[in-house]
Amino acid sequence: MLILCIGLTPSNLLADVIYLKNGRKIVAAVSREDAKQIYLVREGGEYALPRSLVERVEKSPPPAAEEPATENSEPPEQARDLPLPPPPAAEENPGSPVIRDGIIDEAYLRQLDDDFSRNPSADNQGRLKQGYREAAIFQVRKGDAEAAIERYRHVLKSVPDDLSSTLALGYLLVTQNHFLEAMDLLLPATDRKPRSADLHLLLGSAFYGMENLDQAITEWNKALAIQDNPKVREAVAKAERERTTTSTYMELRSEHFLLRYEGREVEALSSEVLKTLEVDFRDLQLELDYSPRETIVVLLYPDQAFRDIARSPSWVGAVNDGKIRVPVSGLNTMTPDLARVLRHELTHSFIRQVTLGRCPTWFNEGLAQLEEGATTTSLGTQLARAFVNDHLPPFTALESSFMGLSGDQVGLAYAKSLAALEYLRDTFGMGEIRRLLKALPGNTDLNSLLQDEIRLSYPAFEQEVANYIVKRYGA
Image (tube, rainbow, N blue to C red):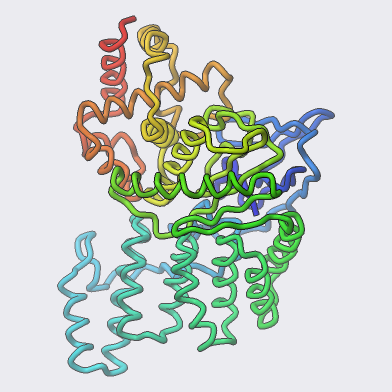
């Protein structure tokens, strides 16, 4: 179950599926094809994929007319391939005492808790559920799904078997990639409510996110037995195809990782990879002041030659979607380069969980390079000259994927991204980088975020990074 989503937006959710010969697949809109290449639509242009890598293409049907979307009607991008029940209802309640002057009235919520604690009547229970539900929906709209998760958890402490709160919490856990937590919630819930198709649907999606295709198919089939759903039938069919493709893979597990590989020739290397990642995990916990709650999936590709995948846009697996993908053909033991790439990719996985997948590419790549131990030294003079001559794309143009850039541009884009993070570290310290990282889920407008955190507009930040590099390396 190896999925690369390229430039998905709400307008192209019904994208095509390109199955690759190595078992991976890409979900994207195919704009055109010729004898040598298939062209995929992504933000700002097209991405050409050699036809020699492709096994087949499944075209999506034309999208049906849709109702206008509400603010939180779409799940996060990383969950859009999963069959999900509708999200928690998000209708407005203008007279709600929970939201006052654009903020949550915490005193009112505490009063609801006190009332229910003194008298756990059906009336007080209903008010408590409604109050916390409105607070959770408000926080989802504000981009703080993690806080909303805690609201629903609070309700379930008082009303453990409430189905609507369980479904709302399960939906958020799955769409935020908290698959293990979702399973902990949903497994006992399906025992209590075996006729809830939505519970089985969410549980199947949680299993799917954890690469457990057998259990995902089982739960989705249970949902289908209760209520037919074309999207679920399609998900089952795709999962069955993926199960066939990955049936020869073996697994290793550790405290924080699930590693999958194919072939006995990389078995010893796989153990080394797992040990290296566990050491890096502990380091990054301290460095970023964050501990991912979800198991991180690692996939080793013995048929792909090892290269510096962090700077190799020709290899489609270079895009990190929370899983760590590493080509290892030609390697039989840990090397310094492999160790560096593993730390780089693990940093991406941390960043994805911290920011809920909302980190601009330049910040994401800059921090991953910083954590792997890279510096701008080797490209310093060239980078300084490029800053002075205005030969670099602005940071606003580097917020999305680098995959459309030429080889020379990619190198400079990575170098500029690293320069920005070096500037932040050397000027404000790692504490400021951590604060920016943790602020991103609720504020993806980098101009306002930089203003709030370091009192610099985006253009001023651009100039300060240029000054920093020119002062270090000259022009």
